[in-house]
Image 1: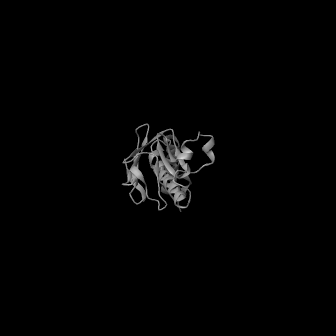
Image 2 (image 1 turned 30 degrees about the vertical axis):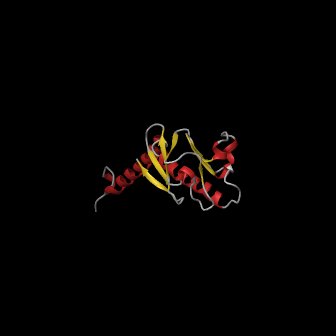
Image 3 (image 1 turned 90 degrees about the horizontal axis):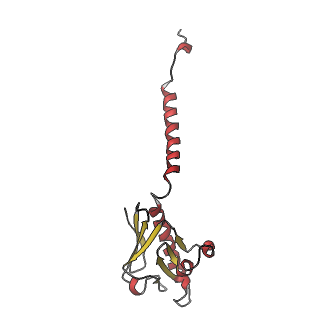
Length: 161
């Protein structure tokens, strides 16, 4: 019978386990150093869709006139959301959920003019009635995404690059 106590080195299983643990640790560490700049437009695209739908649904559920700024979508510089929320300062709008504001991003509207009003069916009115496109651009030039609103008020993801 052979005595294995004199063998030097590691078994294959020990090496595989160490490699797997090191790879998991390095992926975690790399994600902490990368920051959010590389994915900010993608994350903002989902938030923007949610906010647009929220303003639209709020308008559809209301019976007030269409001049109420809580039901009008504002697209300006670094804020998108209800006109009421985007017109407030940062401290005032902290309790609101109907806006997205990011100092690292720029929101640009094409195909219409801001603000966008919706009718009681959720359709965009005025210059946006043919549909509009909202470009979300990272100020650092990293990523760009689009959010589309068609003439029937359907809000959907556009292309990202």
